[in-house]
Amino acid sequence: MTDTRLDALCGVLGYRFTRPALLTEALTHPSVDTSRQVGRDYDRLEFLGDRVLGLIVSNRLFARFPDADAGDLAVRFNALVRKETVAEVAHAIGLGDFLHLSKSESQGGGRAKPAILANALEAVIGALFLDGGLPAAEAFVDAHWSERVDRTSDAMKDPKTRLQEWAQKDAMRPPTYTIVAQAGPPHEPVFTVEVQVGGRPPLRAEGRSRRAAEQAVAAAMLATLDPDD
Image (cartoon, rainbow, N blue to C red; front, side, top):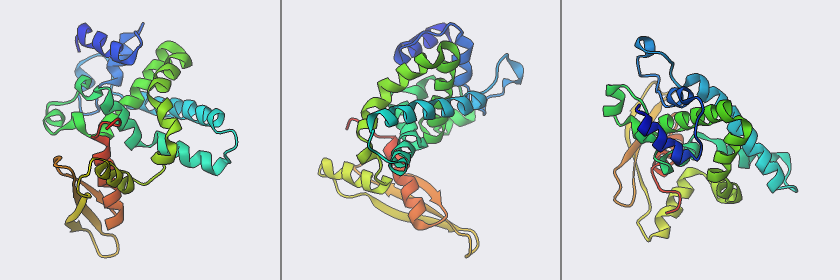
């Protein structure tokens, strides 16, 4: 990635790296062959960033809800750090445009895949932590999670409920879920469900039950939406 592109992303992140190689690593998907170049993919930074995000969010929840018990804090925490929420933030800042993917992954829509977006953003948070310490990571998380911390009552709702409420807000028809495939033995089936809502391109996801697949595909659709819509 060119220095100009890295500078553009630093502007989005609100932080300028003293070690730009960390940011490059955080943007490199495992599909990229790194054997021919210096560096590695984002797996290690993702591992670190996941823990850094968890520390910051748990600290913010502890301070924001002093009367909440541990169980309530845990539910709120899970809603804020789950992959779907992280992917929503990544989508909101346009992180997919900066990812370094293999040709096949890029052509396969990798820049919009919630799992890739979430993993890459966690890696970016890890890179922020390594380059600028906890304050740098906290500044980014606070900028993009503070309102979500206050809205955890909504975030605690399951994805199907949240997607239906999103559709209702704009007087759309409720989401429709269709089983498009079922595989595996009877005792261990895998369902593939497609969701359509609001004229948006349909998405598909798998689950070990129809309900799990519906929740998964609703979460995937939510990750494509602007959280301010």
